[in-house]
Amino acid sequence: MAERQKFVIFQRGDGSEVACQIANILYVAKGDHATVLNFGSGTQVNVRQDFDEVLAVLNG
Image (cartoon, rainbow, N blue to C red; front, side, top):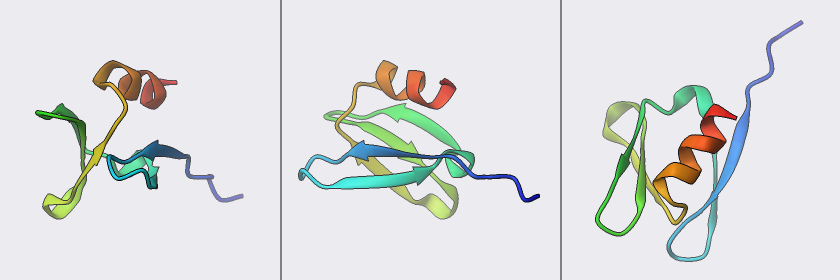
C-alpha cells in the first residue's frame, strides 16, 4: 500500500487558503509580517499563522 502524504491548510494574508504537503516544506522562517514556508527551488509561501502555531501543526 502506498504511503499517504499529509497536507495541512494555512491561511494566507489575502484571505485565501493554501494546502501544503508537509514532506515538501524545507524550513519555516519568521518574516516581517508573516510566517514563511520555504520549499525547493526558492518557492516561498507567506501564511498568517504565528510561527509557533505553524511549528506545532507541522510537528503534530
